[in-house]
Amino acid sequence: MARKAKPARKRPPDAKPAAPRPATTHERSAGFIIRHRPPGGGEPQYLLLDYGRHWDFPKGHVHKGEDDLAAASRELAEETGITDVTLVGGFRHEIVYFFRHAKRGLIRKTVVFFLGEVGQTEVRLSHEHVGFTYLPYDQALGRVTFATAKAVMRAAHEHKSGEGAGKLSR
Image (cartoon, rainbow, N blue to C red; front, side, top):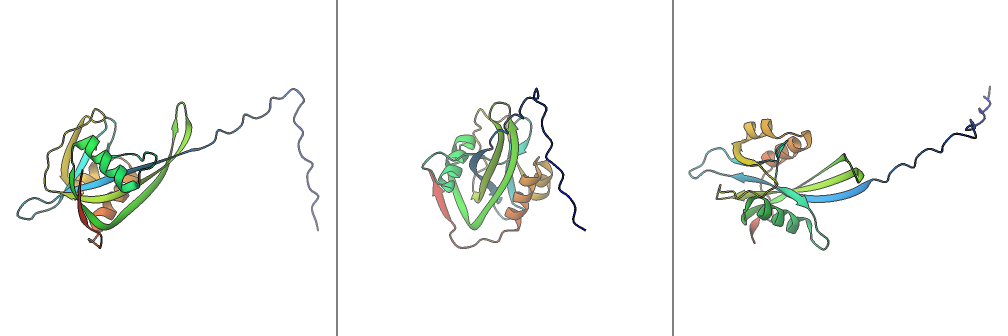
């Protein structure tokens, strides 16, 4: 037996129209998972930055006309002073998340990460950070704040080097 469709509810004449839904703004960032292998072997150490409220990796916005790797390299240099990094080939990991900005509304953020190895552990922090540390994988995984960062770290740690590895210097 067929059902009758219900008539559409009419809005009372004095009701205000629903506020339009704000558009989602899209942002793209790029960054590096940096690891350091101690001389003589040993467990690799991962670089984490203290943003004051959370621990994460060096990353930042991709500028107009810039590709992801160039943006990641620039941000690494700006945030840590690291300019000599070896790109670990075959690793490129994207995450997507949403957050609400007080003035710009809902933001859909895509961040692409590359894996890099450094011979140095010196870091010159930018004004955006309050500290840094190099930690072995298990401790670093426990320190990073967000689930997406943990997923990227797991992927980087499990990655076997592939084609395309090379030295990047700014």
